[in-house]
Amino acid sequence: MPSPPFPPPGYSEDVFRRVRVLFGGKYVADAPQPKLVWENSWYPIYYFPRDTVAQEFLQNAQQSTDGKSTYDLVVGDRKSEGAVTVFTDGDFAGFVKITYGSADAWFEEDQRIFGHPKDPYKRVLIVPSSKHIRVEVDGVEVANTTSSQRLYETALPIRTYIPLKDVRVDLLTESKLVTSCPYKGDANYYDINLPSGKKEGLVWWYKSPTLESAQIAGLVAQPQRSGLKKQANPSTHSIKKHMY
Image (tube, rainbow, N blue to C red; front, side):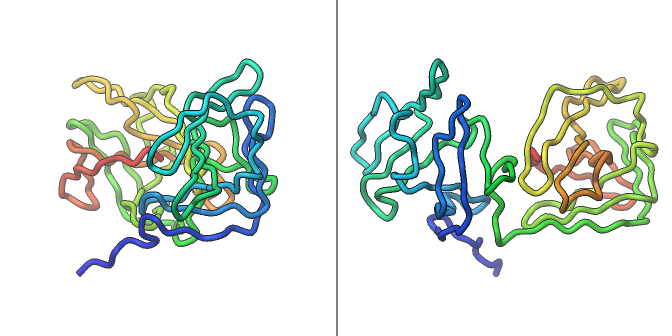
């Protein structure tokens, strides 16, 4: 039988590093020892002791009956509605959650966090591969390489990153889409223009990845969707694309 996910939802642990949250030019939270909390099994988020969150930036309280209150985060003329949850009962009474995307930036010590906090029980492994990879989308070859980087990320599908010289760059146009990953950094996307139509955001790449993922800098991620064929694995894949 498959192993249950770890950590399971509801698991938490103390973190012994300073974590700060920047919004509207002010640090609205500054905690020397926050908690990592897994609300789901995919990734953790930070909960802050209430006395480490600047109360003057919390406005328009909305009380609830399930042991928590919701506040708007307000700094000057900047406002993020319902961004802050204060727990008043239960295992996390006295702690505060700030919705990750509502803030301008998050920092662990002096290092910026991308996407969400890293899960200490997951990792990224990147290895070079000479496997022959031929990528075809809707009958059109878009990449052909024997020099790629294979990225293994815990609990996610294997990703293959291909040198740009082995990709049909004439078929690519830059997309405005940008996503973030704590293990790899900010990803930019390309659309693929085919006779069958435009495939939006089908491939992505990292211009300046994090140090642990430096091997994939400037390489293009092999797309993984239905209609794609690979010589290295002849079966057609239909895999939900994770956004980082």
